[in-house]
Length: 167
Image 1 (cartoon, rainbow, N blue to C red):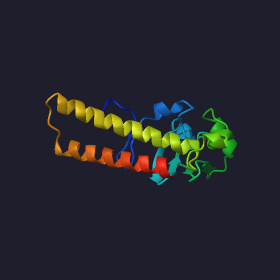
Image 2: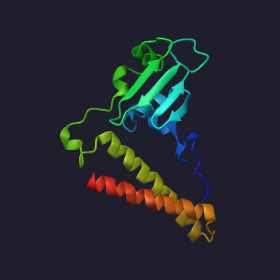
Image 3: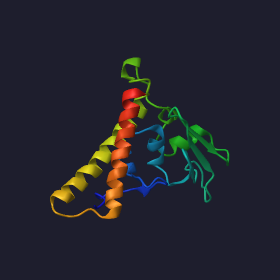
Image 4: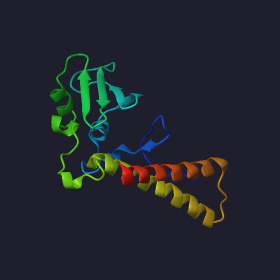
């Protein structure tokens, strides 16, 4: 089963992130909005380091942290103010926070940005299953790696469904 031409970087979990998809503010989390505009290296769960775009940085001095509630914290160890950092990449401080939504847009206590993120994961996993099914129908047997990826897609879909239905 082939990767369908995705552009991006592979995260520690093996998922490919296509940051170009997230440039559209309707679909992007605050972290995705910022990360799509800078070259950052993953430094742990919800953490990245990058060269600061607000000054002539040659060694990564910008710390980026995605909080559980979707907020993004940025800190330049060279002293650049956060508003200068985000302005240097065409964003504002408001872009570091999840979009405000009224209570009717929450489902089972999930913030809308998290629900959208889960729906994006489900959509990708359904695509993995569809490609595997198309390969099988075309007479191509699945390799062991492909069969394992199909099982992982099925498990991820069950987990997403559980979170969406039960919070």
